[in-house]
Length: 138
Image (tube, rainbow, N blue to C red; front, side):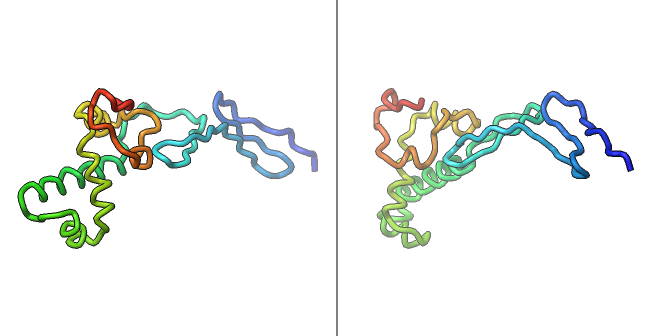
């Protein structure tokens, strides 16, 4: 039996060929971090998509504004009471409620999926400047 010549599927982004009876697929990839998570970006063509919001940030923003409303309406009288009602520590409640001090422009960018690169819950854990103009991510 004659040895087959490696066959390559032409593509600008990836390569498929046969080597020693095996099919080998080579896909160029790039590793990067987004929202605190390791991501892989392949060189395969992708259809243009709408930007998607950072789900973790968006969910925590929603919690923050809901909890703020519950505190302001008198439904809960303290961080401790709110924390006990939802089953979390008051320090967690306090940390999430800090998100309500983000500038409206930054909140809008987060909800539109256009948040600044590197912005994550972890990066917001430290104190958030109260003055919107001092929020370097905005």
